[in-house]
Structure formats: C-alpha cells, structure tokens
Length: 407
Figure 1 (cartoon, helix red, strand yellow):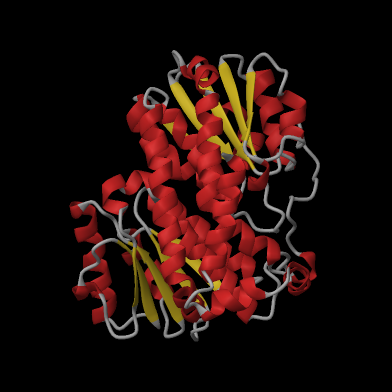
Figure 2 (figure 1 turned 135 degrees about the vertical axis):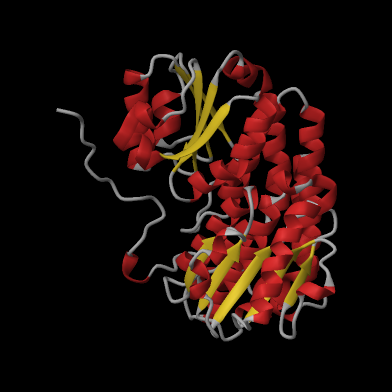
C-alpha cells in the first residue's frame, strides 16, 4: 500500500508539469541540479503534504488507545511549541476546547520555560501536548523538564517529527510522557517548516476526535484531495502572483485561520530573508491600527471563512479596503468567493470542498497557499529556499542558549 502511494505521488508531481510552465521548469530539472539551485527539498516537502497527511492519520489512529488514557479525566489542556510549532498548536486550540469541554490554551515553549506552571491553564489534572519538528530546540526539553519537576498533576504528550531528537530520546521511556513520532518524511530537510507544520497540526487535531477516528480519517482524506486540486490548479498562478511588485505582505484570518495567517506571515518573512516584510492580523483587529501597514506595495492575502456570519464581517473589511484603495492587490482564498469582494488586479484561489469541512478543519489548506507564494518569491529574490537565510541569521534548529533556574 505504501509503495503504491509513493508511486501515485510521483506520478502526480510529474502530472503537475502538464500545462504549467513553471512546474515543468522546476520539476523538469535533474535532482542534482535542483539541489545545486537550492530548492529541491522545499519544493518536495511542500508538494508531498497531501500524502504525508494520510500517513500521519494512520500513525495517530494507531496511538488512539494510549492517547485516550492521557486525556481521560483531565480538567485543562495546554498545547505548546516554538515558532511555527506554536502556531500549529494555536490552529487547533479552539476546536479542541469545544470538543473536550475543558479550558485549553496554546502557550509558547519560551513562556513555559520562563514562567513554568504560572503559564498553564487552571484545572488539575492537566495535559501538556508538546509539538516539535526536530525536538532539539533548547526550550522544548527545558520546559518539559521544568514542568515534570514542578507540576506533578500534569501529564505530557510529545508529538515530534524526529525520532532521534532530544525530546523523543530523553522522554520516550518516562512514565508520565507519551511520545508519538510522525512519519520520517515530515522531518523537513529545508530550513523552513512546511510538511512538519501541517502534519503536527493534524496530529494535534486528533486529540479532539479520539472518539471519532473514522471522521478524523475522512477529514484527512478530504483535505488531501482538496490540496492536490489546489496545487494542480494554482501552482503557476501563485508563481505569477509572487513575481508581482510587492515588498510588504499582509495575511488576514479569523479564529483558527488567524493562527494559520501567523504561520503564513512567518513563511514569507523567512523565505525572503526579510526582504518582504509581513504582518498578520484578524479581520476585525485590522481596523485598530494595523491597517496603516497597507501601502501601494502591499499584497493582502485574505483567508475567507466558510461560516456565513464570520464571512459577512470579513467581506465588510475587504470592501472597506477597496473603498480606501489600500494595497497593491488582494489574494482571496476560499470557496464560492463573491465577485463583490474582487477588484481589478485581485486573484481568487477557489478551493472546492472547504465548506464541507468547515473553518476548524481547513487551516492547512490556507497555509499551503502561503508556502507556495513564499517559495516562489524566495526564488524571485535570487535566494535558495532550502537555506534562504543570508549570513546564517536563522538556523534550521535554534542554537543552544543557557537555561536559567530560580535562585
């Protein structure tokens, strides 16, 4: 089954080159040439995601019995990570809180390291879910070790893409820690998180669906198909958008899609080495000052809700932007996008199937759009997506720093 899946993936990637000049150019080069140009890993890791989600789905369902024991009887839930991993946690916070019926927070690894149990939600016993690509960031292990010492009523689940990372190796045999490792291919070789982000998000999402594994599988399968259709239809279009004359980018979203917008803004910032500056904001929050960021050189990427009430608020803002003639152009991502939201020069990314799943299940789709935009802009800036940071300002794994303890 796995070999057939990989074959289908290879066939699909080859099929992207049909009728899409940019795809034909990028995929058509030999692997050695792609690596020399510095985009092989990032391109592969973006485009493989629809398949990795299915494997992560299987991995999480296989862990269901252990996870049910971890969740049983808890009165609070905290999700944590650093950087993109924190944003993945924030994407699932609301649905998990609504499904489990307990106070749920998303907390950065750095906050837990500095503030310990004071940063955790009230209610014991509790569960902390730590999300990590490598598991080697200093705050990841540092925060977990601190809380094991100071919060005896907190249980721990670690979800990581790296079975050889510090988090997995140090805690896999601890009686209060359950470690789940995701498929190897989710452990990105590129500097930026792509496959790892969406797979960590979907893995954490399962915690709210432990009693509905069949529905979880259906959601993952549907997301996979929607995203394959998205990449097949808009690969070259996103490349052209990325080549437009913008030097700032704004990413708008509501609820879980705002967390996705945080990740989207980070991807553009990282992959352009800061040459494109970015801002993320909620639709309603945008009026309270951040709107001043929208200038003539600003691309505005709008993640549009499927919920009719939420969408009404979002469309009001888009029409206000048009009235005020703010921004270079808009990229509107959603389903059944009304013509009234689109002005000359705007681009519509129409994703069939989003309404069927709803806003809580679809942040990964919006992130794919942002990943491709950032990838193409990186190439346009003459940078290498696999290692875009000029002068090594940022690294694939955060460099070690001292861990301080209370005196």
